[in-house]
Image (cartoon, rainbow, N blue to C red; front, side, top):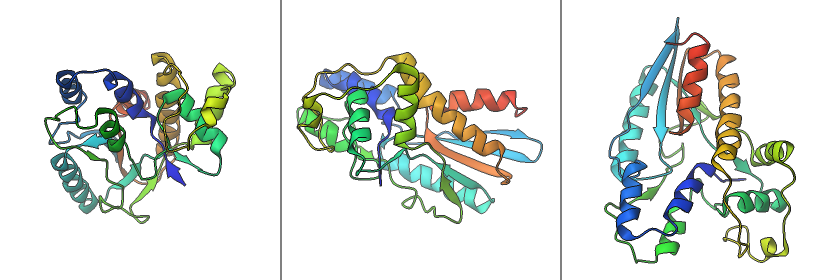
Length: 241
């Protein structure tokens, strides 16, 4: 089982045609060059929920800061939710459908997007700071005793998309390369509304349902930063402050 995370697809399509200046500006605006993570907390009676907004590409100092904050929260009894849309590499049809929607190949590692940018720019862009792929939960010192993956599967996400927007029809060009390579097909990225509904809202509902049925009093959610707007709004409706 390996992971593909769709939040990076927006970055990919924004930067594909950018100049060096625009690449660095986009990375700065997207927070990829941040050195610190800003966490927030909401509460309801005895329950506490902390948001740790994650970047799937970032600086070493950013990830060091994330680990330090995780270590501090662990000492005060927090339980952690981590993000991972798992896909089965044996289910190549589902994977190729997801690639067709996003243009992002399947990852061989926990989060492996840096090599995509390296291959695109091939030394033509001088990055303002050195960037790295997001570390795994294990790299952050988490294990099954203090954390769990709270996310939908890739199959569930594709099934949900097709139930709302119709079947994703694959073409011969979708099969010309391995699942770890970008296909030669010319396809448009999904629209902003589809991204919001499928890649954010659908997954957010799963997180919120899990959280509301969780017996842990203190929960820290380590997720892509785009998710927290929707999650926070819903929890505020549930009485959190």
